[in-house]
Image (cartoon, rainbow, N blue to C red):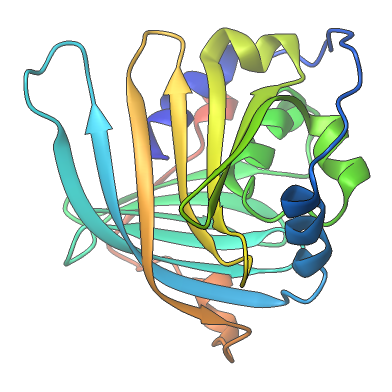
Length: 224
């Protein structure tokens, strides 16, 4: 997901009309199960495929989610990048550089970012209406007990950055198994989840991290 932040700046929020799609029973069951999720955590293996590289890049990490929209992603062990959506900001920490970027969520400048931020919690829509408002459904297929749901961002600006999002979930337990983002340049970023915990008790400090005193704080939107 980290590549997303470098590309968000040009997003718009115009939507394209499309014919409504009837959701299949597995997808409807998965959506119904989302209302039971208040917190969620998992380890993940992230695989990035870039046209400039012959071999994919693989990294492990950890993710935490708290409904409706708080998240924390840590990439690498020890973490090389940490992205946290708090109640008021998006914070991106770079521990090796002792740098943190802050993007306030309650200012006018954040408007073009909202569609991209919504993609970060694409695996946790709270209703059919929410899913259909954010995305166009391209396909819904089931194989070996896993449903693959392929979505296209509804916002035209978001589609210029990202072609599609694929969500994989178990058709019995409705547990999220993986997500894959396909970017406009043909590169992909896949997260395969493991050691999943449903509704664990999470420390509130996960989503309200203190900024160390020796870190450089940068607010990129103020420099635009």
